Amino acid sequence: NAGVTQTPKFRILKIGQSMTLQCTQDMNHNYMYWYRQDPGMGLKLIYYSVGAGITDKGEVPNGYNVSRSTTEDFPLRLELAAPSQTSVYFCASTPDRANQPQHFGDGTRLSIL
Amino acid sequence: GQNIDQPTEMTATEGAIVQINCTYQTSGFNGLFWYQQHAGEAPTFLSYNVLDGLEEKGRFSSFLSRSKGYSYLLLKELQMKDSASYLCAAPNQAGTALIFGKGTTLSVSS
Image (cartoon, rainbow over all chains, first blue to last red; front, side, top):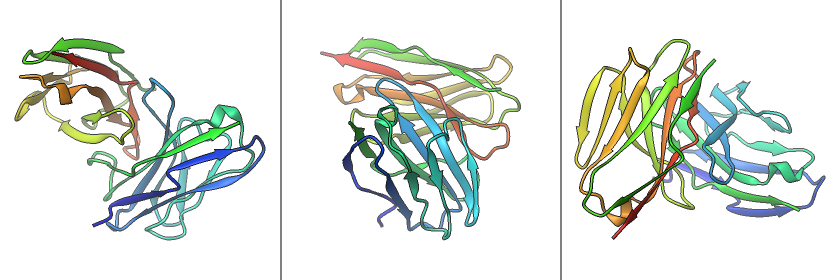
């Protein structure tokens, strides 16, 4: 049982490059989330989705975009990478509401130089 | 708006008991979560309280007082492996996502 899978695990980008962080889950969960975590800080919500075709902004959406074309996949796109986006990114999911334990992926460690 | 506060760091010794506090301000209340996060790893679920009182789960217990906007995580018989960050979180007003506190880093020494 894979759960939530994130790829890549590590990536170094140059300023201005773009990339997509992949997230897929095999638990048929409707709710999916993207967080970023800076050193010594908690998790900040970037975007979330309550089902295929539905996405909404979290606390820190600027510089990111998401899509949710299927229940399984919730990719996060950085269009013009900036040093401020250096962080660890976590994807998570819950079955059908937020007040359920979240299942997290292992994270993507992204450095922008 | 929502605000979740918890201490930044705590230290304790093996075998001791430690209490990690969390205060929250939310527009509407829909439960409170505690997660554990070891360095370099993803958070893992510890507990969820929606009613007032203490819920015990092995060495870990979690308490909630809705009237005071207050929760704590109690860790007993501390072990070295309990050294981690402990995150307090609550659902947003719409009930569609979690808002996390900054986390409390607990260091357990021998």
